[in-house]
Length: 113
Image (tube, rainbow, N blue to C red):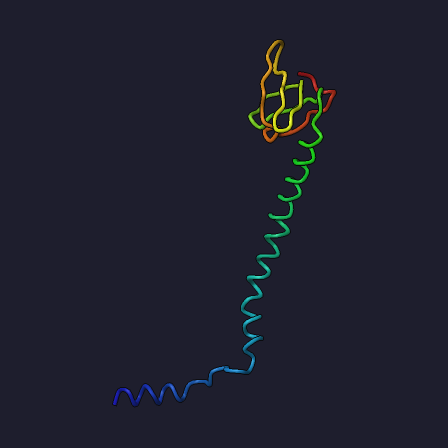
């Protein structure tokens, strides 16, 4: 008897959407997810890629005499440039060899030490 009531209740429910509006319903349900991805792309991913490209260009154009700041916060002047490393003059008679990737930024030539 209980199963008969369940079957009757199921039969009285709305018909499944089946073939009508299935693709439209799928698109409508995925639309918020697509919008979130687009927003993340323009607010997070794209600016980060732009900064990485600018950093690569800066590292590729390093030359002797450039004033730099390393990612560790050390101020110095480039003495020699190698393929993967640079020699930086930190103080009088103090030179350090560091990887090019650890150069954070170039300082303006007018900056005082």
